[in-house]
Image 1 (spheres, rainbow, N blue to C red):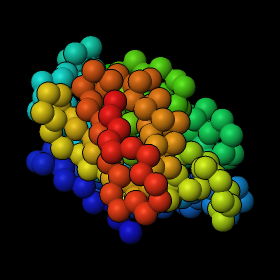
Image 2 (image 1 turned 180 degrees about the horizontal axis):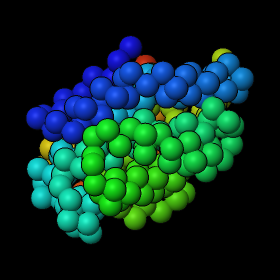
Image 3 (image 1 turned 180 degrees about the vertical axis):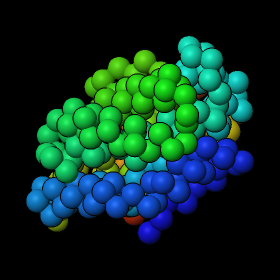
Length: 258
């Protein structure tokens, strides 16, 4: 299934999406990564569906930040444009989990040498200037390396990818590894997240609202999402609110906020 996302007259991004959608090697790497994740490790999906979700969330986060006046790092540090930043976060989303095709453990590091080659191959037909291609490749690789929960992000684009990755968490799609079919705090909390909504915040550029069916979902927010936001560059720009709706057991909280 092709990746569809709103390119908003960004012709270079549209061309990059076309190249990604016809890249058989890349799609096969996503399949291999998912075999290692789901079939061999018994954890949640890290394949093509995850890539589509993260790419769309990342683009939405970037545009909310841009609308809120937050500068992208490639603009501030390299004099490029937001259109190039969109390419960085999109390809960062496409490449961030490629290393799982080698091994789930330390996959962020394994992803780098695969992402380096794929970034250069993907960008070469779109961007003629070698300096600009090199800058974008470097920024993409930083975003891939920094999507690890405990790694510091040095760019806005890397922070966007880190948070977007964590937000693929609805209805059992937790980014915290848990054994399929097991009953523990990991699996129960993963099943507790019903919906994640992104919108313009009242006081900050990004408002994240998480709807839970059970208070156990707080584990997901504390153990992953909150840590990733704090280790990203997005912390000053995000409002996070979680609500419990339809809980049948004892209500432990009415609202959770960061």
